[in-house]
Amino acid sequence: MKKSMLVAVLLLALGSTAPRMTYALQLQDTTQLSTGTAFPSADEVVSILADKLSLSDDQKGKIKPIIAERQQRLKSILADTSSRPMQQRRKAKQVLSDSDKKINAILTPDQQQKYTQVEQQIQKQMKQRMQEKKGTSN
Image 1 (cartoon, rainbow, N blue to C red):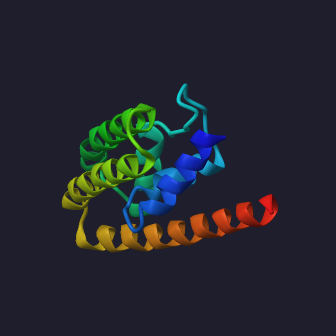
Image 2: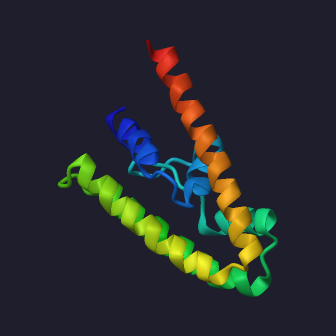
Image 3: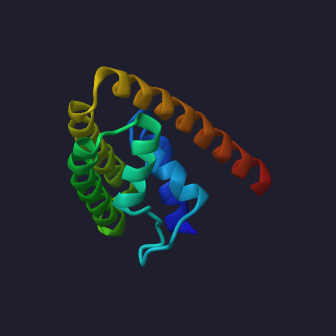
């Protein structure tokens, strides 16, 4: 329960970073990891990005290792019980920001715009889910 609350807070704290798409997918259809946090595979994320952004094979090949590294780093941050929740959020936000820069460098301007639109939609959905959870827990 405490870990799921931390993940929920982490998701909200991430603000406007691109990987919300990844985390929204986590909330819908996921496999639980030993940390209690679910992450879709790098292949799943790239597949979804390819569908939403019409990625070329070259772009997919360049983005996949970025996603895989990001997910590994996020798993490590969430597994680090010696860090305070606020420290974890800051570290995670930095990881996400770094990976966003790398991903955006690979995308065309049109894809970057679509990516931003999807981010905004996902952020709105996540806020609604969090409000719904708060409403059902009261």
